Length: 210
Image (cartoon, rainbow, N blue to C red; front, side, top):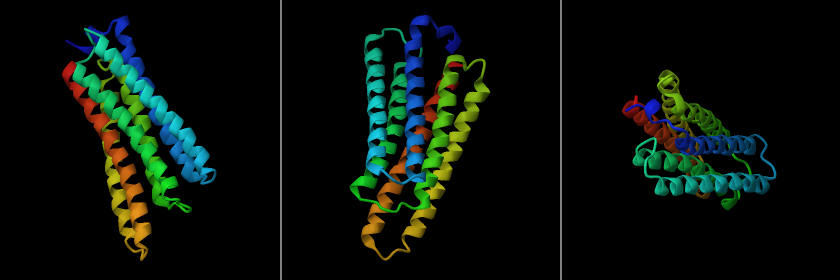
């Protein structure tokens, strides 16, 4: 059975929620880029990002509520659960990495943090492209495949960024700075891993239902 065969009007709620989560990821990553490009009013900017994270949590909860009450779903329940969770995780780790800027009282973030933010923003846009294709993946499988390939490439970019950032960081003689910056880098790299998890779920859905 294909996605096309499964699409009926009452099924659209899940696709609406997936797309809402993807938009939230784009919004969160855009705010992260702005935070590092204009590093001022950090607490206020973080509060705005946190509001987006709360919105993401609410959307994820709504998706799980729908899953619990819906007998026949357009995708396998495990696919829906994995996709909702992985999309939510992307925003959670962006939020947590940004929160550490306040926790550690970071006065001067380095260019690696901005590079991570830009990488995550690009990945979020590819996620949005891929998620939108779920409604019509039979017609646009190459678009979905292309988005997933690009997300995987960007995750590799994040891995390379982490290696370069840590190599540079370990030149420091300040152990406290090393601990702080390393923790922030690793949260953003994990956010990239979660983007790759979204791509894995999307790829599995395409293979199973096309």
